[in-house]
Length: 531
Image 1 (cartoon, rainbow, N blue to C red):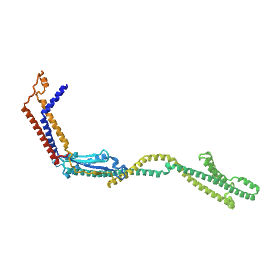
Image 2 (tube, rainbow, N blue to C red; image 1 turned 90 degrees about the vertical axis):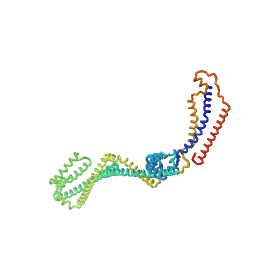
Image 3 (cartoon, rainbow, N blue to C red; image 1 turned 180 degrees about the vertical axis):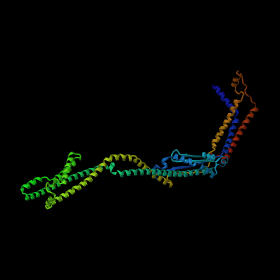
């Protein structure tokens, strides 16, 4: 097995030795071919501009309406890239700088724009707010101009885009605020009208109403007690007047008819109907405080008062118990004590009447407060239903007010160009060497192709050659063993010719290599080769 491998190696070495001239020629030929391909390939130059995204220095990253809070640097660059590389902008650059003249004669403008778009590379940095704009072309001066124009357009479009976005945001926030304000005003108007209509019945007034109601009830009770005291005083005064009149009448009777008749008269007028009427009225007042009007005692007392008033009105009885009104008047008017007591009685009656009027006012006020207190739970439920959405509306309105102020602030910053913006860190420079074609790569590929051709052709030729050059091949083909082989015997002349041919080949290879080296050096000195 090992012997076969050695034979195979010797076979290929012998093959390459026989084809050595062709292999060297293919390698030497690949060098000028590679140079020719390099020189004939159009040169492509590239210029790069470095831009940075500077955050706004005024109130940085504090406003929620700022464009920096909405999108990151990559999103901003991606959006602006679409705007900068739009057909309108690129077509304007192509026309202004006279780019792709040959292409414009052969292709429509949209294909030329697509071709230019492929030559533009906008690449954000993986770290930091920095990105590059690169443009490739065949003319270095135009490449620099296009790159700087793209960088300037990038800055211009960014300022325009941010201002438009801030303007739209401010307008939207103002519209939303105006709508929310209209809803809030309508809601507050309804709440205000409801509060003005039912102010005293609202839940927050309930405690005040209860306290006021208790105070009014105490005042009412105090007025009632005052009336009772005045009525008691009035009864005492009436008793004094009655007693005084009785005493005067008794004196007159004793004078006219004697002591016996005077005693009889005293017994007849012991209790007069007028005093009884006063007592019944006082009793009715005290009963009304304790009981309702349907109570039996109150009804019975009212019937007695009505019957006694009817008797007095028809003249069946005299108010003083037996004397006529004219005689009593004549007796009482002449007594100064009775006059003074009657004056006091009238004053007390006037006071009772005034207190009754005050009581009536207090009673109406108490009824009003009782209605307010009773209506408080109903008003509380109605007010809760009315204000259920007001809290959310108020929070939404406050948020819109804040958003509107922030949007206007950001719009002012953008108009004054104080917001985040792009800045050219490194402007495009004139490219001194092309990026395409790559001299080393082209020459390397040419050498690789030369080696492939130099070694590939002998292998293919050996595969197609039917002649035998190895003992094993003959035995394998004929199927019989070979007894002996006769080697090639060269004459001295043939050996001399082989040596000369080898020397001439080496000389030709050296001359060819020197010529190729001179050609490369010439192109290098002329600047045709750029590594």
